[in-house]
Length: 93
Image 1: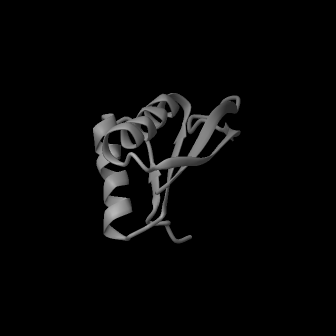
Image 2: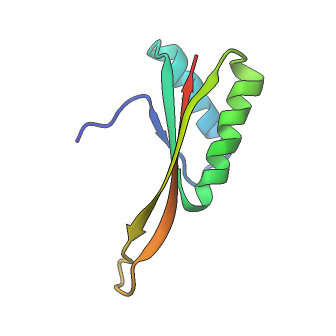
């Protein structure tokens, strides 16, 4: 499975790290669209990143689409599976 260069997976790092990744995605590959993907507690960070990019760096960037969902995660140690929320935010210039 090839990893899409215009997809940024948001995790535990500070939001500005992901903001720089979005800026790099827009500038380096001349892409018109960058996707932020997050799940669980990282969803709020992904929303922060999208808003920082839109309000400070790319005033012309628009949120093209937002999709939400749920994944069932089975713990490594065994046990009952858990449901984890997911979100994808597509930004376009």
